[in-house]
Length: 251
Length: 252
Image (cartoon, rainbow over all chains, first blue to last red; front, side, top):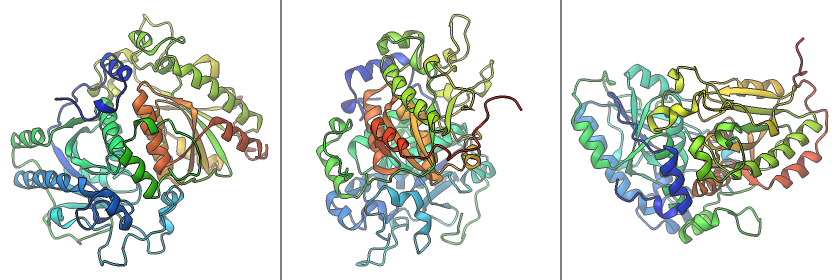
């Protein structure tokens, strides 16, 4: 890997410790990967590309225009997975109208009461952005907490598919991507992260969480390398859904 | 962070100027507040992570590949203070530590990312078991020890069931590594709607940047990262009969 994005945030001692302690080895791809697209919805992207400090005035969770190149990278991965018949699994949030089930989320954010739907638009914050809208054979998992596995059927879907590995994209790097990577790691899936396909509202959190994940839990890789790997796979690995599920079926 | 607390936080030095603006305006970092029935969690404070004595990290990791070096022992002193305060109030103290088969089969995904993973299994050359909790804060008879194989104290363990049994509504988290098992345990506790506080001086990590930024992330979204003294003050306000059904500490 060329100079990793996190080096500028590490201390000199950190670099020496990581080099000596054996972390950051290459875990390697599995043989049957599923692509995960975590929470790439309007709440985290905003409804149009604009600088983050503008975007978060209306969308408090927005990561601003860093989402634009990430969505393009995710699009290229989705297209490749569709070509090869590999599973594409999206997550996004779901909440009661009265917000009762936001629970612990509302404790740490002073703007937690703001509804995902912004009055000036008809856009649902939990809707996956149109540029990468799920196709009929794709799978959408609705969740309430950071990890895509928490309180959902994601693990059972991966078992049903016979997947042995996941390729992670989405947002935020330090939040729901990180939490999903952790659970996938704990379940002994091989985990890869497409670096350009991840984004975050905090530049330092983005870089250091990539560092932590690459050290211990996942291979943080360039998207081009992931695409090259998918090219090497056969096209008949998976029994995917036949298509046309309820658009936002409760997971 | 808009928690109304003046003064610098350990993560300020690692954030960009834009990050500080984003955190200030996006509403994150509010004070969640303590629960009413807290349990103390002491995550993985074993010889594997602390080394067998206080020494600089780059020396310690020559023999203990997971060691966090000298900072471990400062944190252990803070954890001891908290554990004693909890015990004095008859409140639960729950430790986690690792457990693996001697043949290492169940190490699983850990082995994929670390070239020195084999060293965390028992070796005849080591005088101590890497998974043994350090003697300075050794579990007392009424304490609870949870054995785990993955970062989160909740994953594949009975920790959630024990918290339900105790009637705990909140956890106060200490231990190591801040960016690893502490962070993973905090996320699961958050996801289960427990109130979470992190005792800042009671946490340690091998990476200074990871320590600071993971405290930042947790304080922004999942937990109140507070000084140990603030937690001790809070514990002092609680009744000493909240948990009449702690383990008795001896066989029935």
